[in-house]
Amino acid sequence: PALGLAFGLLVTIAGWLLYALVLRDTPWFAAAIAPVREKIADFGVDSAAKFVALATFYAAIHSLLEEYYWRWFILGQLQKLCSLWPAIVVSALGFTAHHVLVLSTYFGWWTAPTLLLSAAVAIGGAFWAWLYARTGSLYGPWLSHAVIDAGIFLVGYQMLGERIYS
Image (cartoon, rainbow, N blue to C red):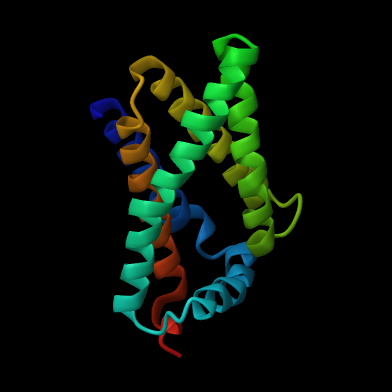
């Protein structure tokens, strides 16, 4: 769990710094505010408390479900068909493909943010697959994934600011 936690914290801090120092004022992030706001409104989020509740669900529950699916199930099934590293690569690419669809909703297809964040997802997916294979436990990958998801929601909260309420 310590390695997963360390990775999660490192990625979260790096992601927040990248957003705060480089990406915050880019046209891509400005354009993403409306679709992000629309998405959270679809969930009935109209207050900071509801945003925190949604973030907590994604960080704690959704990340665990993704880890079960992508690491325990997909990686586990792939390891029956091929050796570890090809299984890690294929599972990470599948995990990434799912997230490319989400990212392109907010940043567009083939844009710098979609490509950059998709690469980050691929690295994370490969790391979590390797960590799961190494330890035989979902706890480290899940903890890492949960921390990163919480960091993503922190960036989202900063993007939206008071727009959550209006």
